[in-house]
Image 1 (cartoon, helix red, strand yellow):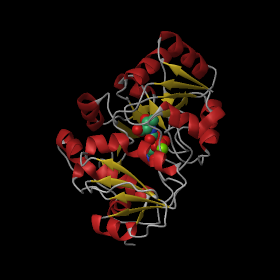
Image 2 (cartoon, protein in one colour; image 1 turned 90 degrees about the vertical axis):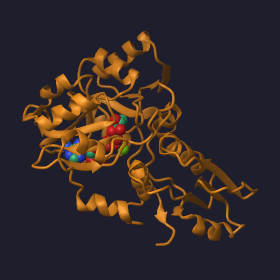
Image 3 (spheres, helix red, strand yellow; image 1 turned 135 degrees about the vertical axis):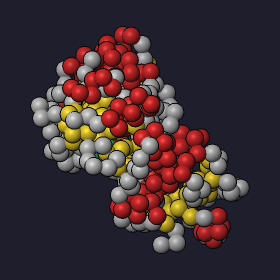
Image 4 (tube, helix red, strand yellow; image 1 turned 45 degrees about the vertical axis):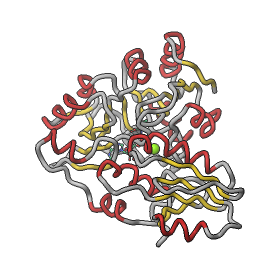
Length: 326
Ligand code: TXA
Ligand code: MG
């Protein structure tokens, strides 16, 4: 595995690697992706084995332009055109009926496909130069924290990735919003930077949130504990619970605050994140990683506000940590 700075030479190298069926990790505006030629079943298989990802877990295919969507999808509805025209390139993946000639490896055996035009100059340059679809999940082991820096990818995947294009830290820091437009009603499948209200504003119709997603967002401690998760036991708590838990001074703890003023001590490493959803999201995964390698007994994460702009963050925290009150 080699980490490359991005220039026209290294983009060319990356394209050759993709054409040869190898894996290339690259930056997007959300998180780093682990890319393979979406049309090459052997290459796509390598993604699943590098990540230890179950084969029925579908991938997002990245494209340079919305105009390429009809090479992958059929019956593309007006709603997709509206969203694409308004947002793309953007942290938004759209699920559509796949064309029958698109193989089902990247789609996890389903007859639908997730497509997205990422808003990152390196991702777009790579996609244009490759001139095809790049299947790319987040470049982490299955269920672990998504990487937002090239070094994170190297630490996660080591030699199972051939090239990492280093585009610096990702600007958004949480994965894309996913909307399913393959059924009767637009349905939100993953919260991201683009909110439900923004989608509804553009579509001028309701976007459905499935019960399971809504429930996860309210409270499902334990159930989803393995997603986006640090290896260290992690609890999310309000300011009150935080002060109670911190009274146990013998435990080695990491604390990710959001508003509370807490000092680091010999046994306690405090990282303060601001009450600003944009900066918080940019830093969340990197800071969780930073705490996770310290071999602590416990990581405490102060719960951020509940406002809609925090929804993607709260969703990821709900999956990465247990509720302290549970
Ligand atoms: O921000 C992102 O979307 C990043 C960057 C690299 O683009 N990618 C990413 O991919 O987060 P991944 O594989 O970690 O998450 C993709 C999600 C999975 O939860 C998968 O289940 C869902 O998209 N997905 C993909 N295709 C689908 C389909 N046809 N139907 C339902 N869900 C699908
Ligand atoms: Mg992922």
